[in-house]
Image 1 (cartoon, rainbow, N blue to C red):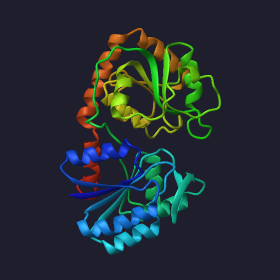
Image 2: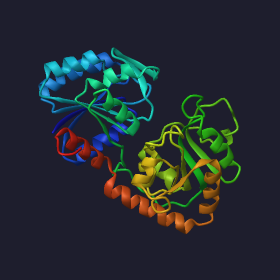
Image 3: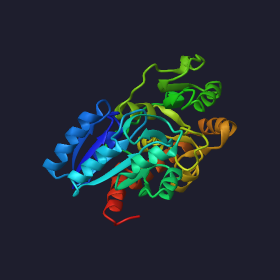
Image 4: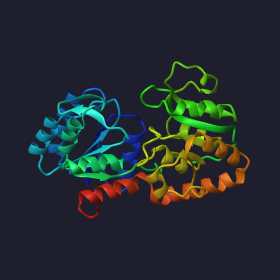
Length: 329
């Protein structure tokens, strides 16, 4: 199958999807539409026709441009043999006008519905988003991310009690994480990697002062950490979970993540990872597991085995392509 992937090049997700598709034997091409959406559209218009592309897959990430309704309608009219799908990899609905362009937090669900409704298939990591779009007539499906099976696994001495890789401190997006991390820093050795998005300096002594990490860097950090901590983008978003789950478990790490309904459907607390409800239980579990390193090692091994068997990006892409082919709901 010939597949054209169009997404903002974040150096991670696009590579993981391409790895998954190529491991399945598909012929894949890539457009980075982060900067110039008009240029990306012009390339897609000619390339789809010349190469007889079977599927154009557009990723919707945060704070980036995307194609307008008219652009996708024109591509579908000029290349009716091609299927068009979009995958929304966030727990938030962002507001796109039907004209495309930049995005921001949603105030009106209708423009987003119009934008994604132009695609033949729309995939999301949130059941709530899927169900809302289906009520509006969008052909929406639930599809979670996965583990990049090409990411390395290291066996290294542990030097951090708890680490966190991601963004924290932003007033609108990641504010929930900051108070958790402040309290964690008072009971154990904490190290923070990623984007420090706050004017508060209380966590700066624990910050590695670097924002981006590739798969190798990520695996090194995970391997050097006793407890890899996570809190989903919104603590109240219970119908989804962070892609961090797959990435940490896939790297062989022990993960402590806030409990969500969907997470409990995929993983077993105390067998594949550990879950917590609220800050008090989070701190209690950190104390408990740091006193039981052999238990953490066993749980991490079970978690890595499960994602390697069932939750690779190639598994997610197989499900997507089966839905598009009518073989799977």
